[in-house]
Image 1 (cartoon, rainbow, N blue to C red):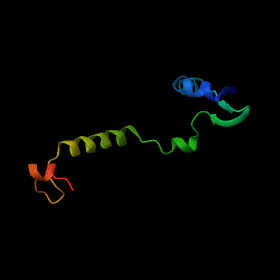
Image 2: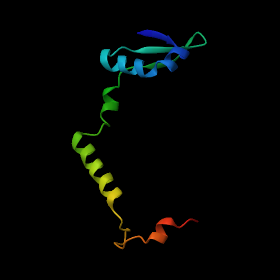
Image 3: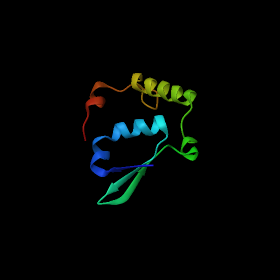
Amino acid sequence: MKHVNLRDANQQFSKLVREVEESGETFVVIRNGAPAAQLGPVTAEARRFQRTPEQLAALDALIDSARRSTAKSDGTRWTRDELHERD
């Protein structure tokens, strides 16, 4: 377990995350001389909530479809005026 002060952790956060991913190393962030936080590998419980490649593909397809759609939920299309209306 490595120790890193808060300033360095802030300035090198991406590098620290990459190192955690690659090596599994855990970092303890020190603030005012005392341990304040811990940066380490994701637990098995947290991994349980990751989306599968199939779920990610379905989500991408849904978002793409929604972006291309010009229909309202009732099946009619938006008019230009409705799209530019402001409250």
